[in-house]
Length: 260
Length: 338
Image (cartoon, rainbow over all chains, first blue to last red; front, side, top):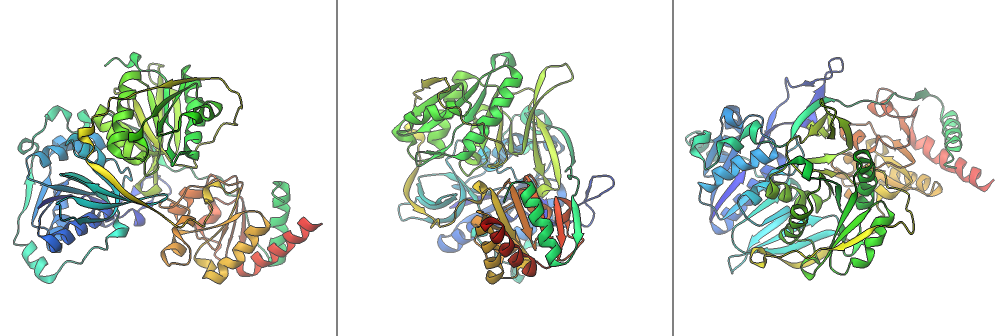
């Protein structure tokens, strides 16, 4: 079985801070990490490899620095890593990104594509399903479990608001995976040694099967009109008082708002 | 493609097990504003099996027309079946705007449709407006949090139609229901291509749902790290009980297993906007604020006077919740008995 895993290098948004004066993101000192849901997806691929044998290729689109993340994926146990890196991809929204990735998938041999549910810098959860549609593959999102059945089909657990759907899929498909369901393994020492002997292949747009007019900014239906720091509402009163006085203040407000 | 051919604001009216979800009514409320600003109509798409008789409810909540697809293929949500039906409706009716709930169903379906129709989609919007563009033409602007809630971004989709977005449940306001409101109900029969139905439902395992939905509560008494443990949450529960509300939680107390995930407020939990939100022992990480700052009235109790929660609180109390909350509960009991 050949598995493609889509991964993205993201800033760790849990430590991103906003410059309170300029209202811009402070990027210095923010570590770049493998997106957590994507890492969960890689873990699922590696478990399938452990159980039934598989060839795992990790792919990513991004700047040359993403090489580090792909080496981490190799050290975890992936067999091959390809980085799509070309100025022609710049400014891509989710549709243009998924289109570029589809062009890469089309020239690779695969039985299964795994992506993370969403990336923590954009939180859109759109690239996976959009990629599935470009490739005309069935999709299952919010995946919390998957196993190969004797008939060659996959049985997949999909989480939703009411519980879990158990689904069976026939033939090639694309899954988007929840990090919470797959505790990712650490890199092994031998894995790290081997990862630096392996090559991270860097591919430009002319190596993949795409119409270049549909890449990057030109291929993106959505545009950022503006971005701005979140407007903070004016803070109310803050009181340092005894518990008795605090109760009094709260009760008066609850009465004024007709809550009691 | 001529943009002028695309008209009206469509809403995907999500139902689960035959029950129209609250988010569908919230979307209709927003769609009503947008359609009125454009001088166009609100059209709801209701898909399922045996759901036809619920179309009138959508009209009473703001739809001018309901397109019903009632088919056995649509009994349970499956991506391909629903994508075929919704995709065909959109190609046939050419809406200017399509809104979906940012639920597990909406976030599965909407990108599939966007890719099929080669159009733009903006995820998890918290604000949708019609504003004049540089030529004075009405432009649809979609605003959403980015970078884990650290920034806001306004997105436009200038040259492709329809313009589509998913909207988080709990963010938009429903319209007051108008019983007897008139509208059109249209049935639509898609041409299903069953050869593409590669995913089948084996079974559904329902989660044990003892907990009422916090997004529906009028009063939330919410606890964070400062509550310490289960016993601490018992104090919050007693206060919630006298106020007729529910208990909610920050992410920290879910991650450490004290509270269930269903109670979590914030970026990775639920968005809530109750009449009263009482934040007890919650420091107020930006991810938490993103889920509750639209509440009508916010009271915060925290020992640390520099806690960021105070920046969104209407009334802030620097103090020990373990003392204040039980005293407050007793006092409110007396007030209500008087």
